[in-house]
Image (tube, rainbow, N blue to C red):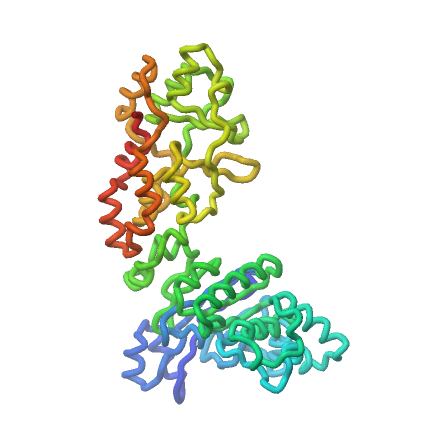
Length: 466
């Protein structure tokens, strides 16, 4: 069950806001409603669910309604219509006393402006939320100290806000919210006022804290890179309405409309997409098979290397066409010619971390899960395809067998069939794709065409036997 459920939440600013509701339900635009009634729609029938422990990012440009929406969630702004259910209780229907109880015990908020009391020490600022609940100092001080330790400010308890940097002041604000141990954190542009380097550090620290705390976090931002980095899911807003909700990968690879597509077109995909989005099915063999079977599998599949696995798909190593041909000629087992030292990555490894590995490996990079279970392989062409927008190609697709059959025949006759190697200059070019391939979609497509990221050509290049 969701921790938070929002249903048809609407806010109209102006006198007699109910006049705008019929127009909202008719699908009139924000501009049309303003022209007809003089009323401004801040949030237009927003509906979404947030799971416990999830970081749910609400993002949009200035005026999109994101900050209004987060204030509707704790009724700092009163909704015109709709429901906000937290643990199945609708706060829109609560009286003042019930609302205060929810705010104090279940909700914490971190603002863009640090909102610290200049006359209070860091420790006293963090204690404030507990103090107004009449919690005695003997109880609230240890909680405040623990919260400061969590955000890396142990030792600064007696300092004053003006003695701290902007990043440190924001940490105090975060510690104040955490000291109350809320179930839900509402963070409204919490890092937007910080310098870029400090902002990145705070994003990293938030993710580290979340790994331990597992709070439910609703994070407001106008920065797409920030949203993609920290969000488990993202809601993108325009003119008060939510236009798409999805994971960072879904937003990036499957935009709902032209607005979203333009919003994400300049994103560096290599820092969002991971190995699992571009991996191909690996061609495998078990050690009980002989060299002749291995060569036949290579010929049938159109590849020049096979990944050796056990019955549970645990990766043991790799055999190449050259090695298998040697085993055949000298009556050796596959195990005797198997390479055990091979490049591997996890499915969550980001593409930008794969560039050098893919570029300088003479075989596809293996993607392994728990207990070294083989999930797939990453080839140069699939990485370039991912950068160009060709994500999640069908796992298991293979190059045409006839493109490598002749080379396999050469291996069978003892000729040098190679080991799925590629020209080093070409490989090095792959490592430099972050320089040569623009993040703009049109640039990506052109660059991808230049290096043959068309699936068949990419596979042919990867698996061509020299």
